[in-house]
Image (cartoon, rainbow, N blue to C red; front, side, top):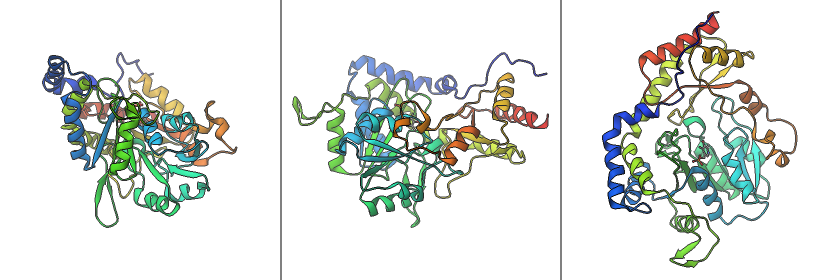
Length: 380
Ligand SMILES: *Cc1c(COP(=O)(O)O)cnc(C)c1O
């Protein structure tokens, strides 16, 4: 019988991460307090510039959260009621939510069974004369095949809005040898700075990216009450800002992002090696032309053993989460967009996926404990 663990090994360790950069973070927050420039202060401009440089993108428009980023992106494209937007059925709800909110139609499609991402092939089958945009989600930390997706978009004259909430820092490699950061390849990229994201602040935050000057102007206007200059409102917009304290925190953490990604990749490599021989587990596949920044380390648990394994891990003090348990088209709020039937890969993933703890503060000891606990379930 397993002894009930007193403490749980968490999915993320934000306290441990903060402890290591406490002096930098505290100084940045104190600066903000002293300046009292809480909105659009110096930190916002600085973080915007530093993120533009890091991503090698012309424009970053900071905003209040990742969901707003997606909504503002849709608003800036001036889409019409009932225009169709293609999204994966296996994603976080926000991706489809903003589409529905704007009275557009989310067209939910299946994903690749290995990478969990949508592909150009799947997208092309879903295109109709009403299709106006595609939202590739770089799920769990690796890029969709953007070169192929951009080619399909160009052929059918569609906008591409990348949902990069889970993959900031990942590199996509083009066939000609060029590289680009995810979120900078489509017409617009969106990201979230929710605390547990790979680049997270200490509250809510988000950003929109584009290399297009005209789109950047529209995005900025939409995020700021549709205002073209102060007190002149050309469009109906929203109020969505990244506050100065959060921007200051992000500016500090951006300096550590590559080292954070490396720590996640190291933990993933440890898991991969430990689980390679377990028949009932499938370790995460790598997209051949993308790096993986492991927002999540997501296994497929075969033979209907997921629930039992998860219970076993919980009893052993190891957190495990199911991202995501239900296809979007089965969610009460989205079922009416669905034509019927099932998407086989999405169904299978909802039944089999399980994510293990992965974060920037994992020690060899923690990894050994987690992997031994998983192994002992299969050795029973
Ligand atoms: C987190 C997330 C969002 C939403 O970001 P918020 O900042 O929480 O609004 C959107 N899409 C995906 C794929 C996400 O993981």
